[in-house]
Length: 118
Image (tube, rainbow, N blue to C red):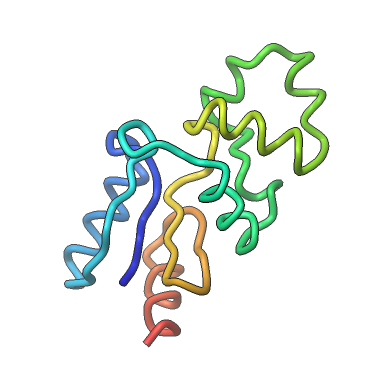
């Protein structure tokens, strides 16, 4: 079973949902806004992807942070704190198949990830 993590109204998330639905892939959706983000869940993510990849430094949430705060995020502990305080700062979608994770969305990356999961 695949679990896709993110925020429902994100355009990239919508593309991922459409791709999964069109390819008849069953998945569970975990919405950071309604389902939350716990330290344990974040630790699970960080076992699969590095914190630099998971931290979305291109999005609105990052840009809204004070520059001094952004400058202090230079290690995993600092990144974890900011991610737990601001789940919207996580790159999305994050698709997990139980043992592997895929960040972001493209038709090609989803096709490859799903075919390697079977």
